[in-house]
Image 1 (cartoon, rainbow, N blue to C red):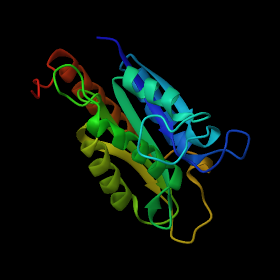
Image 2 (image 1 turned 180 degrees about the vertical axis):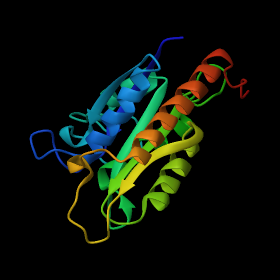
Image 3 (image 1 turned 60 degrees about the vertical axis):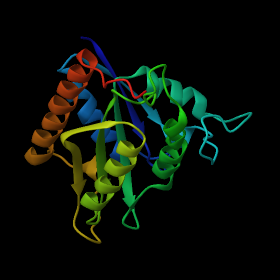
Image 4 (image 1 turned 45 degrees about the horizontal axis):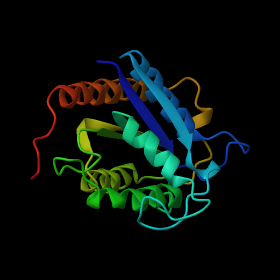
Length: 203
């Protein structure tokens, strides 16, 4: 089964700014999924006017409805965020707040519109906190209907108060490369399983 993935880059930087370490991590995951014959589209959320709120459409000018369509058209969602103040970025949290609408949006069989879709997480930063951030994202994504595979996070954190960014690493640490491959394989495997065996009707 041919699968599609969407990666949401929740860096605070727009595309016209300096390179993003989150983008580099997502690119590694996309390349690994490509080896599993999965096509990945990446959306840099900071480039779009995503209005605050918890509905699927917050009115004229809101960029979220188009991004929501891409999420629901994909089989896999990869949510990538930097760590700021020990937390996921504000851009990441806004995307999760907008996906809160999935809780009340169901298909003809009573399942959340996100049911059957698999999510994975990517985290980068220069301070410890990747486990805390991935735990927050796991819970939020699961709450809004996504399924999480085993070991579904790839992360890198540098030395506390250090000056090295993930985007500048050369060569790439072997542990990161190994983990990225595992995330891709496990996530794609689960997406194929759910594609062949959907969740049962909820009504």
